[in-house]
Length: 238
Image (cartoon, rainbow, N blue to C red):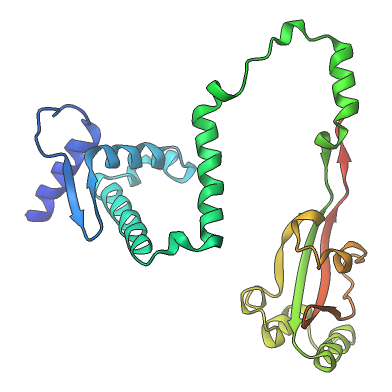
């Protein structure tokens, strides 16, 4: 019965946000490190509605689900703040990167001047294109798998076993790679342009042949075996 009352209250607050402005208390739930208000729930509901999985299945967005989603998120953030994770330089740059993108979206009408497109000539457009062709270049994308080993002799042995068919590249990554994250995925580290890979990996990746296994490349104190699984060619838009 108590759970039903909570659900009804939450439903009222989400779908009728603002209707009870005369309420003295705005907090829906309190937890260690923070609280959740009706405005928080309304914002969470609005954000979730925009996601495709809920946009196509709106029945999943029950008031109880929205409340649990908001509460879990806020409690995780509160715990992270309490442990001072936001002071870690790596985490700070991730947070600030997201914040700057979000703030730009909110403020772009004030920050980006309006352009009078009607008064831009075709010659001006062509000149701008020629001066900024790199902005219209879709870079080549590399799909890469990797095995990381801390000993040269072991790395050479793994390469030999892969090339002679005694083990697949994917199984070698799972068995021998000291990078457990990529190893659990068969060595897969992503599909991206060359400049998005680590700088000291690029020379080894740049000249890989499709589906060929590289010799061990010494990078820092480890040996890396790379395999190019797919590649798209660069494309210059006209």
